[in-house]
Image 1 (spheres, one colour):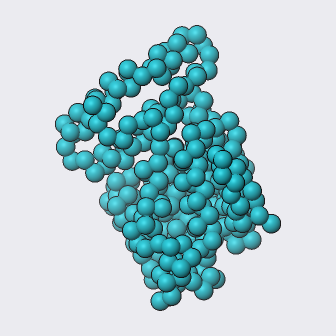
Image 2 (cartoon, helix red, strand yellow; image 1 turned 90 degrees about the vertical axis):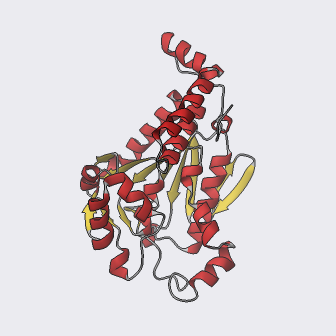
Length: 288
């Protein structure tokens, strides 16, 4: 049965994921529990369609991604004939209309203005772990089994993990996890710096949604968009003076916007803020 959801004015039918929106927070659920939410081409297509559709919707302030059943995502579905081998790229292009460049663009979640919270409720293996590393905040089940298992399958880690993981947790730890493909837990992932919080399995989604609703209600959408973009942009900025110069211009820009006064007044009056700017009002470059 297809799950239906309205994203903005567009009605979208999904077979492998579920989408719900509640008070500015969209929850996207990978929904192939009988396959441990393994990613096939249809799920990949539907997930990217939903994520970018939600990004385009100003009413969606935060996205939470989780998995149905007892797993988050067990990686690519190796039972899918198109998953491996010489026909993989041809089938990928046929079904998704993609090449390697546009594949990268589909998972370029760092370009989104919308914060993303990962609710890793169970096993996250291979691509089921590399993709959540592209999210902004991650909550994992304490006993979730996590693994960058690629080398044990004769393939290579994806989703910019060779670039991102060393910056997140340092070269020695990243090298060990990517090379060995060993299994570790959500609790250990906190110690490694891969996830923000580890909680009992039955509390993962609630903890992730608590993060999300706090962001959606109490933090200005334009401010969140600028913080997300600056942090990701400055990962590749070697010049601290150039980084500070752009940051300072955006600080002054934000101080001139109505949300600056609204934030102060809401805090002084002990009331929820009523933000004026949307996430898409945030400048992507020098606002001067």
